[in-house]
Image (cartoon, rainbow, N blue to C red):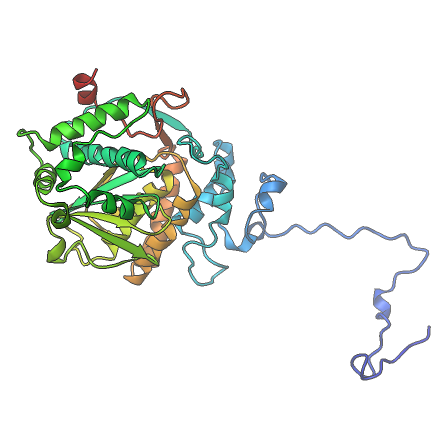
Length: 410
């Protein structure tokens, strides 16, 4: 067999292009199929994953393998991988640097709804639990923040024509903060409120709740509370006192840019005993409030209360849980998550960034993520919905109804 030598411009000089004799198979010998190699389990995806799902998965070396017992118990392996990503517990590569949110695109693809403008368009994560009316005895402060959030939800949607999805309130260190999902809602709300002499003049206005009878009951209840002499909670007294003061003295508006609040409103004396409207960022309302909290100098032992018109979605619940359980804030929040939306999962990134900034140990974050996964495996993480969910009646996004609301406004 003739041999050729490549010239220097063709490759290495003097190197033969002919194969080694040991690699040449006789022509009369039938070709054999290459033997099937069994890859190491740690380098492959679970075979249960359908091809369309596997195509969305990151490289196998970057994920932790769900155990076979998960599938046996009816827990989809891909759900555990998604939850690990959402909790920020995946290594960027084998023995590589810790990257607590790489990547979230898989979870996004699996939980995004293309339906916009519908409160029931999110995706159920872990099954649904319907929440009937319950007593809020002993939780009057939390109930008041729900009423306040509901009132301003309807006020903004009616008078500003915002069509916003949620309003949330936070009470801590003698100040009340409220925020909305839409980045501009609170900024425009401030411009509307300063047209009134006092907050009470604005609150006397009855916003339209359309056909939502429960919303109408809550709006009435909030207006009664703002003028009632029989209040017991500090946050109620603060709201009443703010309502009597000129709006430009009682209300402040701040904007969060690039996940950084304009100023430390939770400790600066100027913002004490104020209603603070938080705008900016395209994240859910709870996450704006959490950024204000975690980027402040407020001592972690200071009580912080967060409630809104609706229960926290799954992504916001993860953020609230993380801030309380990992970052150590004295946070009182609704521990029953609702359904899941894309940008609420993405919003977890800014919270984890803040934890890394203040040197929260990465192993603590991993341990927390593992704990959350165990809770999911034990069927303790599910989507909680109101009793009207799926019926088309009222607003299915409401938090649990309260018995005393029903008694007072039957």
